[in-house]
Image 1: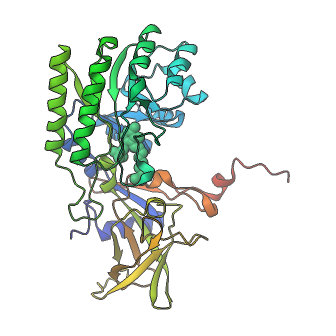
Image 2: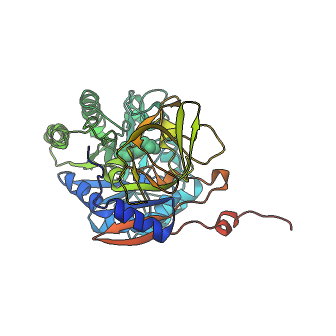
Image 3: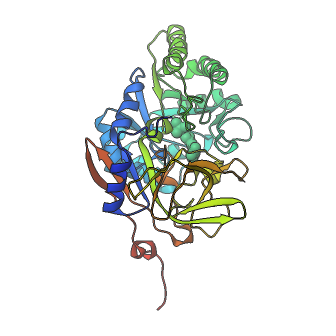
Length: 416
Ligand code: LLP
């Protein structure tokens, strides 16, 4: 199995840690560029920045030709700061908070509505921007129950049965519907895909009368990557594109005008571009079980603890020697909580992983951590957010500093 998906290796990671300390996130922009290129067939690639919203990355991705999705006021601010023009941003949500509504009004940002109330609130606020409608087709899919975005138990989108009413209302209020959108969970497969495609075709047929200006079919995100590095989970992108493109052609013919396809990936663009570099700070036995305790916890990368997500792990020996011996080991973090384990499966089942024998001071690298990594970090246990570092054309640049204790405390008020 290939050790790295990124183009840097042990030496560069050790160098970055020497310069910026541990733990740290190290991104390879070359991988992000490659993944953007993989999806070039689509009319628009709209990056779901929730996966990794650092403005340095956003700005470079803008230069590579992608548009951007924003799901909160904060993400709008990031997109604008990264130089996106408002027309290349789309706000997707099921509710507006007041900050978001104010920014949408100020910058005329197109909106993807996920609830009837959003439509009314736009109108009440005197906002008229091009609309997308996010549809919940009544079924969903995802790598974990927590990321399933369709069906009656999902809060996302406009229920398919209400689609005509909403489209009609939008037209009455003077809006132009330019896009129909469906994001049906992360980690799709082909059987599921064909259901999604027919639901989309059916929805377009139903609202055609109210949406003469419809020009975009957005198929959402959800393109998987192979976290286990065994090919499983990968999608044949050409096949994926062809299935959607045939549907696009059928619908375009039916409507009598051209529609373009838009894809909204987060994970696919970012996951493989980044590693979380950590240091082993303790090696201990609990009965028969061996633990490596590292200086990063679920406050840094929450995916294993939250979803039982698998991430490939490797070791960098700092004494320059390669250890041939492998041992069964549980990798855990420093948090005062027993779920702070990187080798666990869904439901919190702790498992061992075969890893090289290592010692305190060696580095432990958690791979494919670029999507939903740094951005889901927290200050729980009053731990500081780790720095983000970018590897680009052989150079290492700091793109987010390590948080300081002062910054962590800066908004807290104490009488003393
Ligand atoms: N579009 C919409 C409307 C979404 O809600 C999402 C993800 C995406 C696009 C991008 O999906 P992607 O291509 O990244 O699968 N924290 C979880 C994933 C949550 C996804 C939320 N929505 C994880 O770590 O797996």
